[in-house]
Image (tube, rainbow, N blue to C red):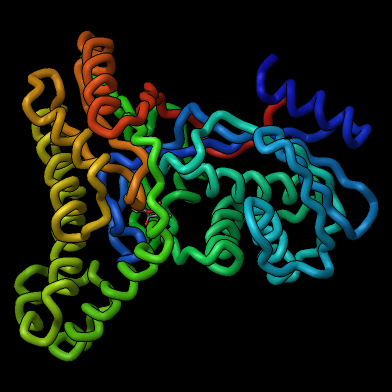
Length: 384
Ligand code: GAF
């Protein structure tokens, strides 16, 4: 049985109605990591791994939400929304953002499940938030646009989950298009799509299967360090609003007034934005060798200067450096676990996965997982 069919069946058994079904995908990011909240550029895409939610009204002020994967039901009232523990925050946070924007909701029932690996840095939480917004918009005819909905997802993360994330994950999941990557300017939200043409190469994700516990606090701390850098630079260049506006030369003017750590963080973000622009040019010329070099450059910056990698991610990336059929690899997403993204020759895929998995298991006494990802459409309604 497909996941959407299972959602529909479970919904009818539990809540005795036929649900509206929303599909909402996870995302990859080719390059441009930790640049979104610095008003820079990112290059993500929605993928063919998704979460599916069934929705129906229940004519009350209460909501019941059932997770097939966790086999748990949570309930809450729309008149008493406040942060709680666990996954229900993703649902309540979006309902709260919609109500705060002056749109009226009524009680609903929801069943969800999916195949986005959790804690793998593939944005299963943004996918869930987007699906909640999208489904409620349809169910209650709220007439909200995709851009508004994805901002509600971000607001839910900030206010209910407690992660001060940027806009990339929800944007990619909501706005994705099949076979297209999105070049997004995170300041203006201007974006363009272009085809991901990898020829005899493909993208493979290697999941470390670790999610180190400092991820959330370290993420918020990185944001603060970047802001501290901007505050120092502003003393020299008052017109500056974010690291997006700064060159390395400008940063150097303020070097004496900032800690070595803050300097490293800022330098990484400036260089990562440049790498993204160069990657887009290389992709346009189909120069995948150059793209691969930028991926390694991104990883090195994230590991050494931004310090959001971990031994497991570094091992998986270092493993590929001497392999002639891998053009590039890097950690992807917020860091401290999750997946690496690998640009590898299709014909060597099986040999690659077999050898890297075995050596990873030897080193860390843990099985990694690998996924072939394809670029897919963003959040939407599906017919069964
Ligand atoms: C996480 C965040 F949610 C994104 O906004 C982004 O900052 C990413 O880490 C790092 O690029 O996925």
